[in-house]
Length: 358
Image (cartoon, rainbow, N blue to C red; front, side, top):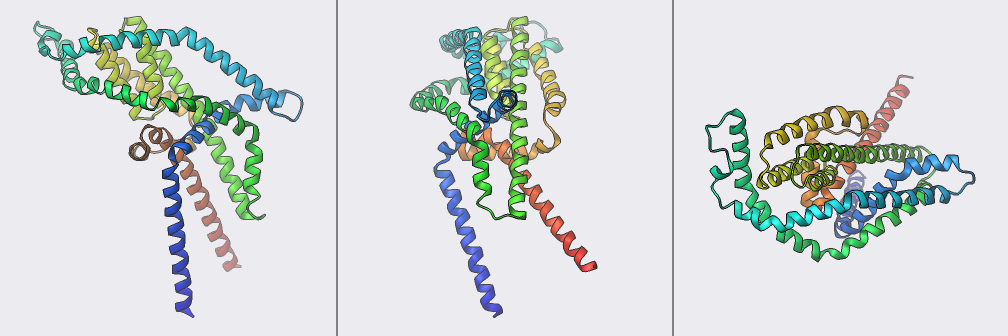
């Protein structure tokens, strides 16, 4: 009897492992589709607070009026931003693209022609060191631009996702509660359904807070970078601020890549105050990471830096830039599931101990 029970348990474990492996294989095969739906879900969480607020104010049980107002307001906001900022970004991007051959030719010149020829002070020594590093590493970065452009053109068909994401987000906002209730109805009444409901509520709050914080942090980076670069006259300042804004959505590694790109473009464009840029980047990073980010994110949404770095690198290896972007919310969601399961196990253990004492 013991051997028969052991065989059944081993078979059950084997089928469970095979099912998980098959599920992971399917997820990997449809990762691009899942990424689009994940983007739509995060986009819906970005708009959810405003939709929820308007839905409570407007009469009726339908969310359509609130959704209509929010989406029309979003379209108007995007048009205003596109007119005010987008045109300048396009102009500066075209100007930088036309100067790429000139910037590449500068890499052929000795570093001494770029650095100060006089006896270097501490400031000049720092600037010279920065310029040497830019010269040594910018050739590889600039040489990748044609390949990046070809890759973008080859995937130009994916631009349709820009339209698809808001449409899917609309349906998530409209039918989200009904979809959650359908999932809960798959489980019988009792502790299992309550457990799933608690996990869904925690994930709901996490994603809403995470997206709000992410957008506010990226907007703060754009405003700070754009204002400072315009003040000191950094070439292509709005373009560089836009790059920093976009890379802010990839935690840790994104801001680092943005800083390298900013120093590279400014240095090769002949800007002579790289030390000011470096000091600004360091000061802003400290403010962003230790003042603004903790204020926007609760302790429940924060992860250890080592875990974040591992998740970003692993996500990039599995699914490229989309994997890096989704790594943090996925890890935070898994953390919530782990905490709920741990809490349930602890409560079950305490109940058994209490029953034994009685």
